[in-house]
Amino acid sequence: MDGGPDSEIRKDSCDPVNIEDLDVSVAHWHVNSWGGAEYLVTRLSEVLDLDTIYTIGEPAPSDSNPYGDVDFYDVTTDLDLRPVRWIQRRVGRAAEYAIWEDVDWREYGDPDVLVTSGSTTRAVITPDDTLHLNYCHSPPRWLYDLYHDRKDSLVGQLARPLVRYLRVRDATVDPRVDGYFANSPIVARRIRKFYDRDSEVLYPPVDLSKYENRGDEGFYLYLGRLDREKGVPAVVDAFAEGDHRLVMAGGRGDVREAVMNRIRGADTIDYRGFVDESEKLDLLATCRALVFNGRDEDFGIVPIEANASGKAVLTRDEGFPGVFVEDRENGYLHDGTTQGIRKAIDLLERKSVVDPRTAVEQFDVETFQSRCLDQIGSWYEAFRLEGPH
Image 1 (cartoon, rainbow, N blue to C red):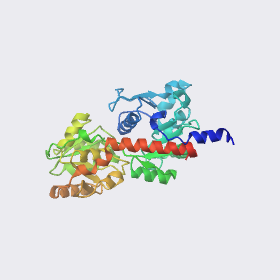
Image 2: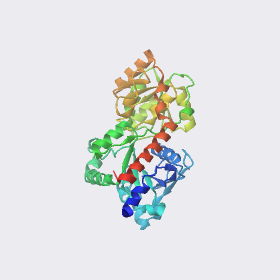
Image 3: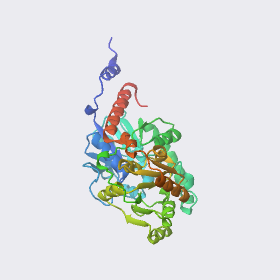
Image 4: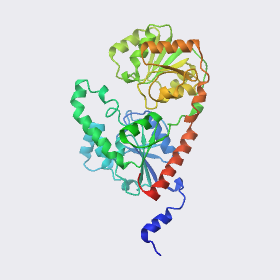
């Protein structure tokens, strides 16, 4: 008995999935500067053998991709009402849901699988036979878990109606995602709490082969932007009046001028500003330990890089670094205060750690590649047999 067209679809769906036969595209929410999210999406595209990532905007500075030979293509150049799109881009994240919603993916090859990176790209409306996966760096923290941290200023008070609208907007696009990757168990927990969805943890890959331990030149290292949310004031206070040397490497963030003056006036602190990849690797290879104080970090690749260099990590006991670091094994935990950081330094000075490098093997590139491809294949198999979600 002929079961009609539907039976033909089910019959074809019994063939095993070969991911190399699938048409896959990758979209990334926006490019303002080169950072960890751009590193991740570049590595993801290389695993999927793609040479183009669809995005909004252009990087500043407009250098070529420092992470690989993958180009970023600005989708707004193909949309109608281009003057309106230019204004939307200037508005920033608040308008990105609308921009991504207007992108017609049939113009880019009608992919079998679309992998989006970031929260606003989740707004895309795909054909019904396209599997939409999202790599979630975190649900927007200023809409959810950090909402109360940002509402007390005048700007925060005035922005509250907009934030509430965007929270609703963010929630309404969630059903368009068929499956979530999370960059850490912390983000997986947030996805469950705020979206009521399961996710698969896929750690960002780290090229472990490029890190080395060239000894201990006696200085501690802070690596990252000088932001308040990264706990910089407490780090500065911990070293400014102590006996231990601190090298700080990273661009100027949002810390107050008083903190910068304290850095400049401290004989024990050497601020290098933004450093290139070569100097970063050299600092990691020769420091005594990394000091990390970010608040409830989603992932935090810098502690992984430090351990890969054979160096201990002194980290705030929050977020993924607080889960990753174990006392005496690959570093020491602290409470984020000046006194807590000093206690962690004293512990490291008196007691060494076992072997930091053993903690990072789970983040190697080959593990990322195999888990990524296997999970996409598994999701697509279920999608073509059962439909979305």
